[in-house]
Image 1: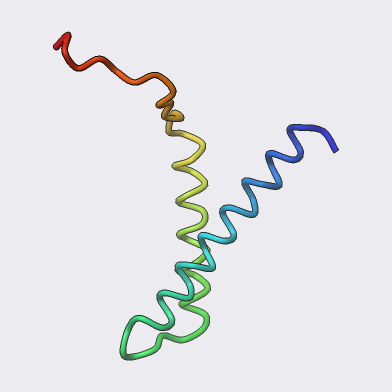
Image 2 (image 1 turned 60 degrees about the vertical axis):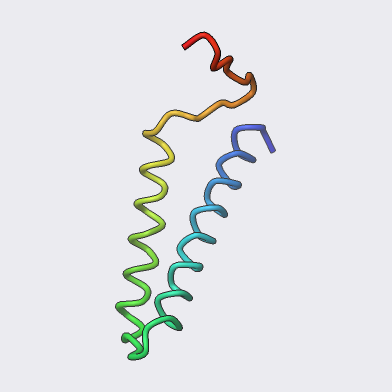
Length: 71
């Protein structure tokens, strides 16, 4: 498997896990449970939203600490 394919699989797993976490939280946190179809739609929407934000937003690099004394 090439390096890019591995990265794509890792991203896909990350998005699916996030959707499952949101789905589980949506199922168990409210006192009144939602229908399963709505839970799946909320989980899928959160996964898609996270994927879009992850692709469009630049990566944050904190490798070099900033010298705050210069400001």
